[in-house]
Length: 377
Image (cartoon, rainbow, N blue to C red; front, side, top):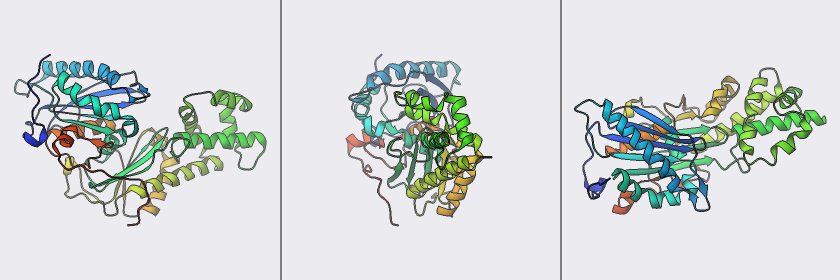
């Protein structure tokens, strides 16, 4: 498949017209998802899923394995769109592509090195953004406004921006952090169950009953858990049991209150001190002050977690608006692609968090900061 020579990139060309095709990609532990959209139109026109997760090896995320899945999926979506598109819809090369990947910040070196050239050759992509999955979660949840997002699932990470730099809290994995996430809650619930089994203080007979129902005899749990390579997921699988017991069991309720405290502290650490949308209606959304969006499967636990979490957020961030995410990380990747194609990507650039290769090559200003340390403002 031949393509015209590479253009000078976004710095040297005008943005494509409304309706030009864009692609968003979300690569995570459950596989690869790809969405096709058009510049100026909200949402995805169509999506497809590749069920095999992209491999990670000694060199980081395997760029070749990602391409092996992405390229057929992208061509399928483009072919499907060409059949159903109105006669006046723009056709041709992809105006922009954004990829959000779990592990991009620490394991994405091969993606940043290999994908720009490979995607230009295979699909004619000239505008590309490579983002950490926390960034696409932010874009899906908040858009391009200042604010913060808490992404909770098996783990937990908070990410905020004032549109100048990124602020990150937690997301350090189940051994070093992810405090308040699914694995943290599940482990705390199993600890309380084992305390009840031993007759130690802080035990929960209700959670011990649930442990036995889910895993079998309590004394056999170490042998079931410790050899597993997917221990965080196994721990997180017990978190819904904690939530189910919380209404009648004070120990389970206390675990969720503690989780809510950890989550709220992470959100407070990253929320911009004066987060304000510059105008109402950016991205078709209303402006606001100090928005904190919650996204991810953790929050499907509902009131047992959300009620104490909202109380903690109101205490730590009294001016914040707590919202449910407007979209997921795939939505966020598509939003980034649309904004990049239109020349209106306002989220801070960063070499590992949000990398735009053409801007980097042409010397356009890019951000270089992700602040992990406590802030005093």
